[in-house]
Length: 562
Image (cartoon, rainbow, N blue to C red; front, side, top):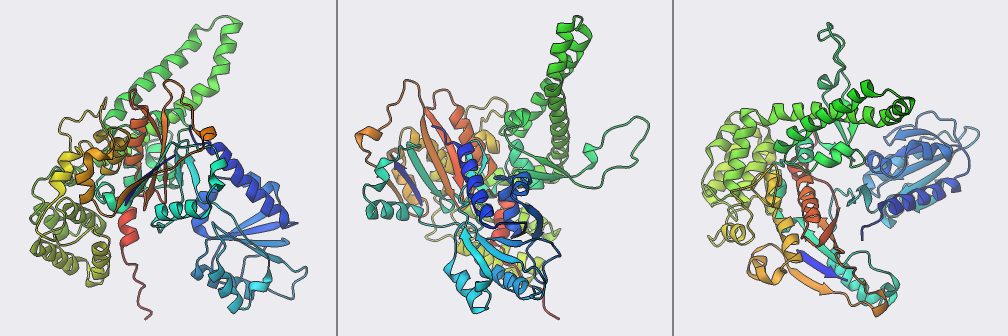
């Protein structure tokens, strides 16, 4: 499904502050000292809204991870469960509550905060277990869209909600007039179902941020990295006392250098880092030229910023070295070569030798699945004998239990037989210019730089919607999965935006089913184009990469109980 609804910059600080206010109000209802019991999947998202200091101000003294058994010791008046509304979590909460020592004095009060919605099903379940009455406050905390950065919002929902457009249009019908008093923030909303573009997440992202995510995984703006490259280098000590704990860094545009390099193709990052090193080195040299008291004072006032810049440069130089060790390996090059052959339409209709070799050498299954699915998508499905060959090889090498995963991939349209004997991908590729041979990685002039040749289909659709409009690609839209439609919202005269000369239109692109960092980089590139005329804000149900996406589709098998 691809849809756009027509009516500046979204105020994410206000969004964060609203989240904090709602949290403070709930905590204040639970008078006295508190312990929070967290659903583990929420700790990262909450960290982007409120720091521990805010919780402390409201008498939160302890924090525990939700797990079965007796709750840990805590001399507090209130126990608050922060949870997503899932039945399996209700079982754990029931266990926690039933094991509470009723004889203890004073008694502890229980409360439950559902994120982002209260659930009648969950409350009914707690009632059937006989514990619903134990909760004094049962409320919801509407953490729908979590601000990740100045132009990026995510629901961080594992499973996407489909058909949002239908729901919005229905709401508009059911509540006529109610929305007309709100001044629109966005000129256009573009809803993109991940099914429209199954290809992009399967390919290896080649931006700096995309590669960090591909190799190490970014969780709620944080990344954990191997510590060796971050050890302070002291002369004459060799490799003594190397740190063993992973190096944890936060990655967002609040850091000046990261904001500059995050969306660049990785091949363009090295030159930026070496330029920065020279600038910083020259700035520190200035101290030798500071003679007067005024000059010395000025140098000292700039010192904290310079030291932060030097530390940032050291971190990103280390990260770039770690990534380069991977990207210069033979295996990375071979894998990327095959991906790019498929995306440019070479040999997509036969069994691939490299994939066969990888299976024979028992490379990670996720790597194999990404490549086979990429070949399938770039060929509008595989010939039956090619598909059967891959399936047989995978099951014989990795185990027959993976037949469930292969079924899931087929249901998702990622790994399927070609129907009707027709491959539409070449037409889609040519019409939407998805493959560019002359890509400029250093000074790009097209979004295809984020994959060194492949332009993300999803972002090309956004680009063409802005100019010249989707009518120019009507035939190709029919070839893409799901319906596509346009809905124009009529606004009262008083709410129509009077655009200043040179003011950009603002489009919210909402990815249902996940978005990659490379797609985000491509949209930011379009926002920064001088003649673009459109500024993009990105929202999604989940930030994904090929590996996390595959994992979400793989069947999780429980080990045998004996």
